[in-house]
Length: 61
Image (tube, rainbow, N blue to C red; front, side, top):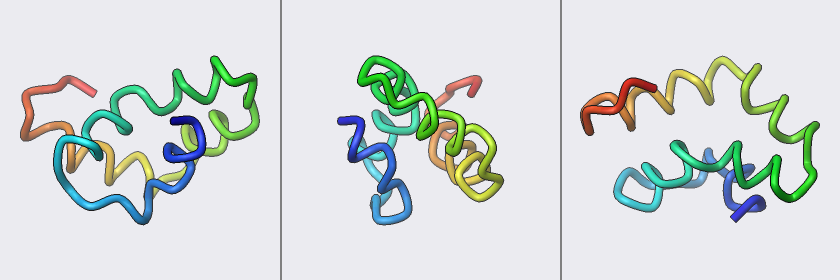
């Protein structure tokens, strides 16, 4: 799952994308990939896409 989280740009909208945007950083941290987690959390396009995917589902981010 950590690898999939880093390929967020290839994800289509849907349940899998919502899961990865909600849990992907945690999977990266669990895999010991601190740099990958930091890269996602500081990537503006990732954060905007995450909001676009999660907000309609009632998530608070």
